[in-house]
Amino acid sequence: MNLTSREPLAIRAAITAAITGLIHVLVVTGVLGIDADSEGAIAGAVDVVGALVLTLWSRASVTPVATLPPDVDEPRNPDAIPASELIARYGSE
Image (cartoon, rainbow, N blue to C red; front, side, top):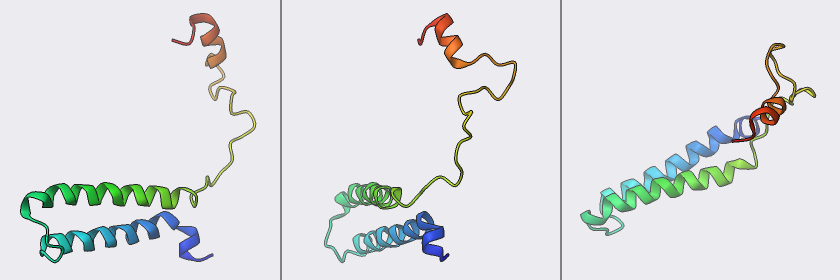
């Protein structure tokens, strides 16, 4: 198993960070021709779009590493009151 299939989120986060960092450098050095007043807003937008891209790109690649046990609805503490009984007693809200 290679690193890209074992750690997809780490690899994609590094790629997204590198691209957003490059865009920041281009904005700060004036290569993109953006005035100083717009620089802060654009930097914030680049960060938000970068996080969004990372989330959408990586979501399908991340899977749980363990399955839930079949008794997942059972309380772990034998003295605990099950949620269904509490809802029946006190209502849902």
